[in-house]
Amino acid sequence: MIRSFPVRTLSALAFAMILPVAALAATGTDAKATTAHPAHMAHAKRMPAVDINTASKEDLMKLPGITDETAQKIIDGRPYKSKAELTKKSILTKAEYGKVRSRIVARQEKSAEMKAPEKAPETKAAEATPATPESK
Image (cartoon, rainbow, N blue to C red; front, side):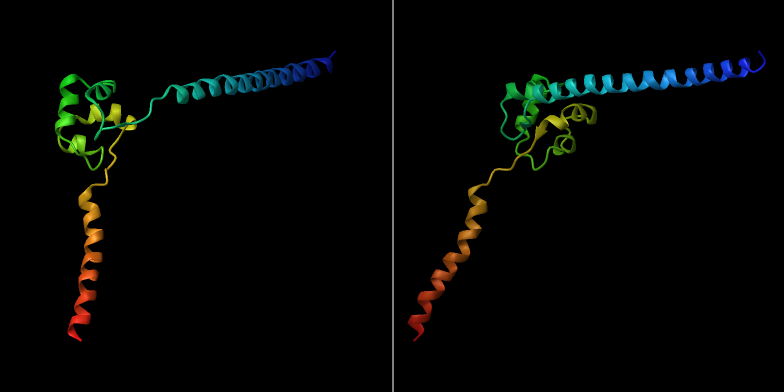
């Protein structure tokens, strides 16, 4: 009987150590399966980013924390080179900007002014070509 006591103690200790490990392993696989599904759902429900340079007042008001007055301030301050200009121009507070920064973009439109300098060197080159034959 003296020997059976240590054997029972060791087997109870081994069982006590194995039981939590088995429970954790079973919970770990279930936890991964349940957390993976809602993450995919969040991506499916996420709306596309709102362009602060072109969005309507109604679209801006759909953003969290953006009121009718704030949306009008955003529209009045256009165009923006970057979305961070909303705080630089004091249109949004840092807290308000923090709520919307992942949901907005500030895309730049290519204007006619940007295309004009590209054509200007071609015009100068065309003018220089006829001048050469006249000098001969």
